[in-house]
Image: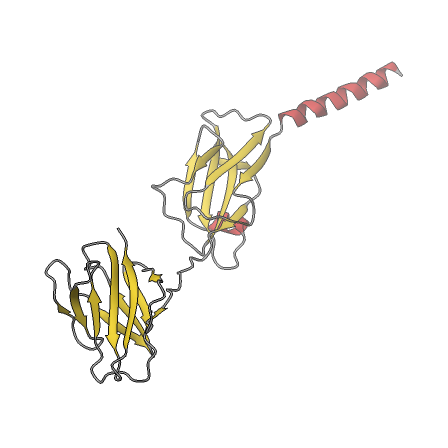
Length: 247
């Protein structure tokens, strides 16, 4: 009976020692299936148990871009790595700035691997993450009005987007631009190059973008401030819009 108990203790003890020497790979961030907003995410993982690195044994971080409908596991095996980092001393790093840039709308897979004698002997799960498709803001069109209501139109990417919805348009439609000092500085036609009345302001381009919508390039405006855009319809009614050229 004593021999049987001793044998059982030796058996279970050896199994516990073996289990304690086994490693557990745990990926932490980015979490599997995450949508991330940054192109330089923190990549972190954990290795529990025996994790000594030597000349024959080391760990590898591998990250790849995934193809459409490709699993992270398959991508790790077949795709060219964006990151293949051996013998990294830590368990976290930010996606390197000198690595190929991550792209919006693309999926990426990553994994930690154990290499011994140049042979893959163990590995973590393969996780994936995605960068969202970049949303391009739709510019807001501001309507020219016969009476000013105090609204100051915001500009977008050095452009003013405006709407002139008027049934009595002049045959030769023109817009007049007044500076913050209320001085006329430009006369602009959607069909013709602008006539620049101020040497300190560059030529302003005005484009008809369809129906009653227009886009005016403000990159030539040297001075920030509140400007006015004015036009007059076929009945001699005055329409205007205040807009701000930011600093």
